[in-house]
Length: 114
Length: 114
Image (tube, rainbow over all chains, first blue to last red; front, side, top):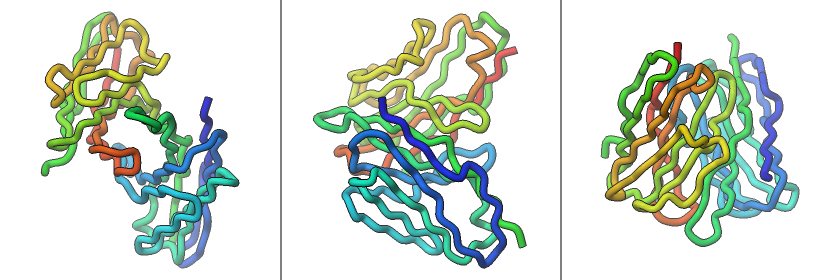
């Protein structure tokens, strides 16, 4: 059974600082997704990583994927308050053929303070 | 393109009653997913359709739960004889085509069983 673990689960940062969220998963996959969720809201897609070594950047967020280590990272550069949210990584499983569903980590609740 | 639409957004029901949620995916998306999310947790996969075929069901989907996608467009998720443990946000998501495509989530349907 595929397990997805994120750490840390809670992260309090000061504005302007850098930090990395880690996402480990237990079985082979090269499809990894990052989502953002604001309180009481649905999930907003941030990145889809499709291969080993994939790196994507959007604004202050950069995501990478190492399929050999079964590890993805979400790096935050010079954090601002607007980045405060919960961030989820999710791994696509059973995607061979016509199937596929996402297995999510527990999420990292990020709070950026002035 | 109005995104994934879910209805109702909020439902309060008495234990033992049946409830039904509807999901309208993004137009032309052939894949439709149902997830459940409880407070402080990541979404958990329930079931998945490709067109009208239900291809996978989680063991979380007890026999009180049934999902349909009769014409390959909208989908319904029915919960019979609701229990307090069913209280959660039910998320619908859709995507098109291959496994590397973005999976878009709706705003969710909040269920409270009293």
